[in-house]
Length: 110
Image (tube, rainbow, N blue to C red):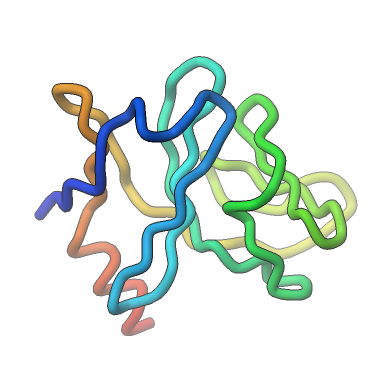
């Protein structure tokens, strides 16, 4: 894997998100209340809502447009809704958030 440094963990508040714009598309990076970091596509498959502006609860995010809920771990819609968003490997090393750059490129080509 080739890891891309996107910023400090402390740049994202707990239960918050940061939008990362790449040449391959926008990725929403979330920090949960237990300081885990997840990265998913920023676009809800329902109506295109910006998931980076959603509400983070546990390891899920609720789309701000129509309240669809997505697992940050799997990208799958929860409850009665169907669909999924792409997930991207993310990790924290030395207080810095790293995304798998190769996965971002592959996701854009799919």
